[in-house]
Length: 396
Ligand SMILES: *Cc1c(COP(=O)(O)O)cnc(C)c1O
Image (cartoon, rainbow, N blue to C red; front, side, top):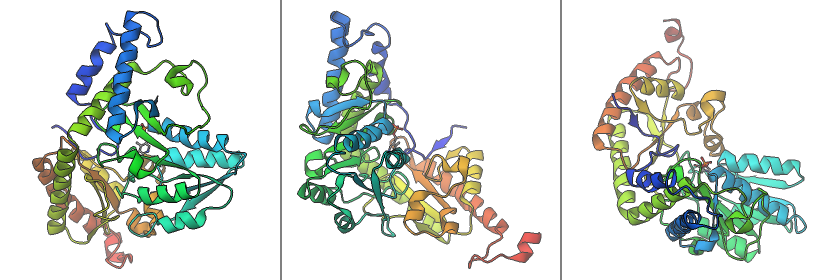
């Protein structure tokens, strides 16, 4: 049985056109882009084409795109590079409690270097309040970093408003755009971002390749040292096949953006309607309007999320508790906790993300499975509807 994949926010399959574009660059077109002969020049040209394809997707200029090893490196570079380059101006960074670990753990590392970080709360819909960003600014603030869209609950943040605040105060503004890319119409100019992180494998491209948009004129320190690649800002022989794949994926995403958004949103809404009509006591985490089109994060009250996940897996259904590491560590989602969700609801939450290869038939099968599994798990649950232990059931 083919698995039903509802975890497109974790990663996506590489589209056939993307793979087809990549293949020649493994074999006959393998030249080092820095080499001064034909196949080297051809590789360089392929990289520059990909750069313009990625730039076009976000309204940037080609020279504002710097390829990295992924979203994680882009986040690291933006925050570390900005902080170190401005340490004579101040030592304060503002971010949020719901960022990806690539951002949060980087901030933690900078705290050890003497930087001071404010981690802002979000409201109970999972959205950052721009007024709080403004209030957190001090004369030491050198960087604001707020994600475009959250990976667990899909909430879209008020980026343009925060960008305007950053600009008024002369503070650099970075946004992790990994989840928003290809799912939201992004224009870096109107968003007012100075830097934005991207990753290919969330938009049907290959893993291990991403990019950082750095607005022209913005200077940050390098974090990788070596050769003069990427306009002397990111050393290391380019991931040629990855870059070509990222470019193709970006081109496809741009061409199909409106259709993709509508298709995925309709499927997500259909899925939610079906679940609502057939399962009691569920609710949605995060704002349902200001949200990525494919994201659904649900609380199945009185059900242990990990148990639900494992039962779904037995039936070949891939979903997620939201944070990729929580399954190993059993630590509760930092995003749901930051929204003020009580622990029992955090542990009852599951993320489903639909994408371009999801079908209505898939969703019908998943709903049928959910109906069965949820009712079984609720029968077994030691908690009643007030979250009190039901001693009779514990003994059974
Ligand atoms: C996936 C993800 C990343 C990390 O990107 P990689 O390319 O996997 O390193 C960073 N931020 C967000 C919001 C993500 O969803």
